[in-house]
Length: 320
Image 1 (spheres, helix red, strand yellow):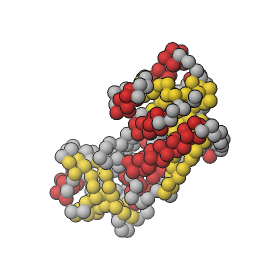
Image 2 (cartoon, rainbow, N blue to C red):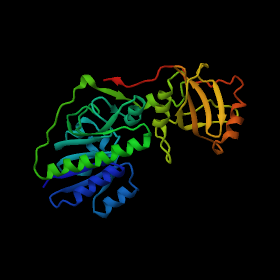
Image 3 (cartoon, rainbow, N blue to C red):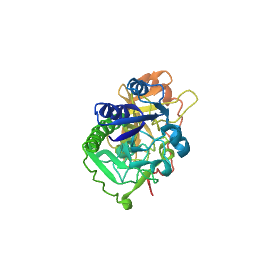
Image 4 (cartoon, rainbow, N blue to C red):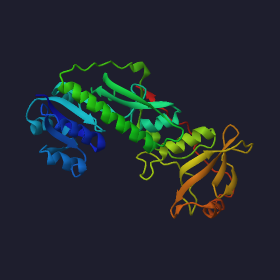
């Protein structure tokens, strides 16, 4: 009977536990999670599965002491904790990870947001073997889906998670049916790694094209939740801190990028790079969503009539 340890949180870990719990031939040894008081933890405890803090997996000796036996598989489902090589080596058949992104081009964190910003036409999810180098192990399953011009950070993440649930269900079924897993090594010459610190700056660069600004804003939009990385924003004045949630691509403009062109009930129109413009159609300040009057009050505190933005280059992933 194959035995499993599951590590992770949220929907994907919940789905993996559900799949395993329906199989009489599967033994679930433990769930390791950062959410020890959650719907996921309650579900596991209801099945009689021990729920343990994910931090225990950072110490091989602690891992041995709490598991107290050899286990066939580790399934990492929506888990961002980096596990030491000595821990991964404890599992007789191996450790598998769900990555919400396409490998090897999109390793690391927040890759679905970078895919929007990079203008990709499709994205997807990957199941791969885990090794000491993060997101570098051989690929077992991968699936793609189209990216839409209306997609935001949250809509793409949800599709990544839904795809990951399906992929992990297929992999678990193969394991329990005795089917060998076909693992394809990654072409690491194509590998790009995106780090958390590379995406934290939410300032819009008005020298970007209107389509690049639109992608930047959409990627940061997690409504009704808050983005775990950055939120697109405008200049902060004495009275105003403004988060930009939606923009529309406007017409041509011969004004300096960042110049405030117009205020209407539809929002604030601003000149962008390459002689373009964008209209900010939804933005939020401390008092809530801005209307035309709110925009006029904000603009009154920008005496130059030109919005500032970032000037340094934007990271787009590092080879590693």
